[in-house]
Image (cartoon, rainbow, N blue to C red; front, top):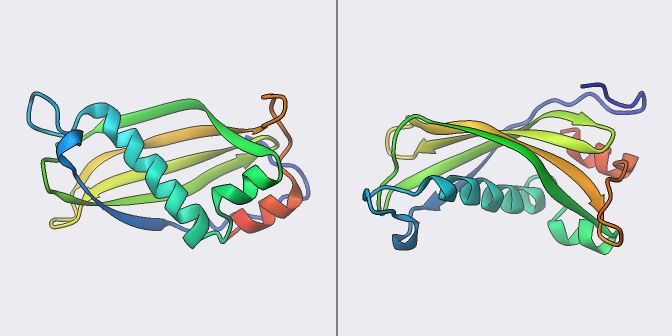
Length: 145
């Protein structure tokens, strides 16, 4: 994916959030339902946008921007169960004119073993129109860490 010429070089810093599996995350097979893994990634990104990038989702909203998921991919390696603690690690793999590709790993905290990995491809949109928007340079600067 090509970046605009003024885009800074991304250092691909990796950030982590800790979470615990809750009872309502469990499916009939007694492990975390597959759809919950994306919930974990979204919750981690919400946390990391504020804590690590210094730009919470509320800042995007105040400027009339939002993010929509364009594509996702996940590969399951090991199940998580009730009460398990996990580390959700994310990093920006690529940034283009109107979007970012965020890679993620979900690891069992007690063992460090990989439970799932994949990516989410997001497009920045105008909240007023719902259409794709070019990412402003001030946002590129915040993400270039």
